[in-house]
Length: 131
Image (cartoon, rainbow, N blue to C red; front, side):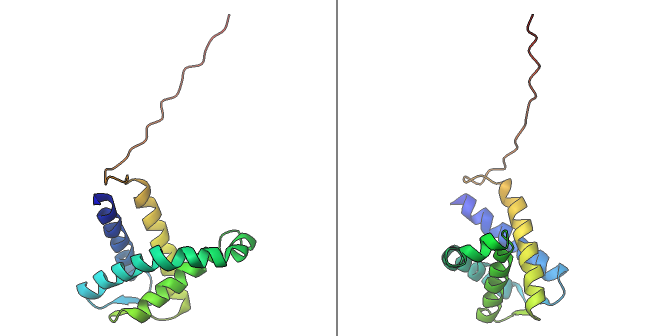
């Protein structure tokens, strides 16, 4: 449960970063930002797997680039559902989806299911000498 809350916070940070960096994405307040994170997380959990399943041939044909379009569509749907979260068009939603995906992926790779930060250390083996 702690890991899920931390992942929500990571998604929130990614959405706020996208709103600050990408021109054309605006959040009008803290309540709109929190609603955006909750709605986007629910859409990603419920609708995105269904869209991935039905668009599997397009995803394979485009070598995975169509997943960015699906994420942009979900971000656009979030803007339609949440008042106070606006997108200026299709391209800001594409760039926002790319940025949210990149930030979320990098930060989620460091968090375990229990909510602990994981650090992987690779110790090189010494070569074996055979006589």
